[in-house]
Length: 336
Ligand SMILES: *[C@@H]1O[C@H](CO)[C@@H](O)[C@H](O)[C@H]1NC(C)=O
Ligand SMILES: *[C@@H]1O[C@H](CO)[C@@H](O)[C@H](O)[C@H]1NC(C)=O
View 1 (tube, rainbow, N blue to C red):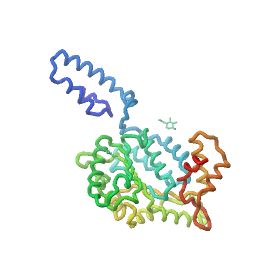
View 2: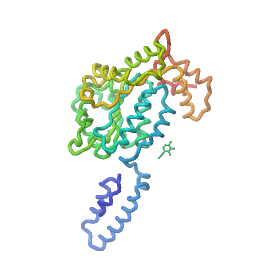
View 3: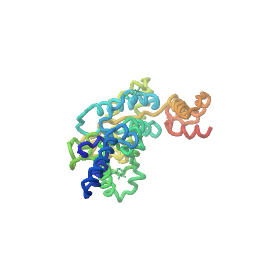
View 4: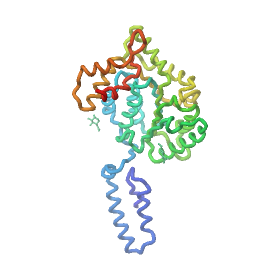
């Protein structure tokens, strides 16, 4: 009865503990113990109460699409494609009661264009504690997988981690930063988890989300954006289809993309290639204002201009795009 009453999200270990304590005691204390245990279970049954004290993995927590949209609109600048695709991909995936495979997103663009930022926003909208959540895992190759001669170990470890974490929480989120610094082949270790299997060794990965971040393809995106600009086209008129195919092929053929000749691309296991466009002067200004707002300081337009003016822009002649995107905005504001 205790077992059946296990509330959603309460670790099985906790519930199992109770009957085990009871075993071996004489009848009277057994009744007492069962009574106490029931009272405790009753308390635990109150999921809201329980989950206020401990982080719960709520697989069925609906995604609040309005909140996600607001977050993206308020905090991410100049990325109409990424905003649109992320919103569509996540709402579609979370509204689907029976996804056939985990959701896999590959984010591409130069540093400072918002890839890390958007993955943080996505994580927070899926698990309120965001990157600090027990159900959100960030892998950084230079930190977690630094040595080329240990590729085999990394593959085993990665499989073990992902299996362990998805077993504990089906809606786990895995973020792989700096994919371009990952040794070729490491990522292929997770291919079975990303595929259209109902179960892999008894575990279903279909509710998990994998996000890859990479600078690879940044050159292709910049070229396409610049070409559009030179042709007098509006930035917002650049469409995903103009970039997606170029990107997946470019990444597949790039030895330093982390996805070089990867089975993930070969087998079409990546659901979306999402381009992050280089940022213009006006976007840098938006970043500065947003940063001021988040610090609770009044917006000082003179300072906004000053910070934006200090950034360097390319190409040499036209000076349209910020070299570092919005990356150094925070540090520069600290300086003033
Ligand atoms: C969704 O988010 C919006 C904006 O933050 C909020 O007003 C609304 O109450 C939320 N809806 C639910 C069901 O939580
Ligand atoms: C979950 O992943 C983390 C790495 O992010 C790892 O340290 C941990 O051991 C994994 N948990 C399980 C149960 O495998």
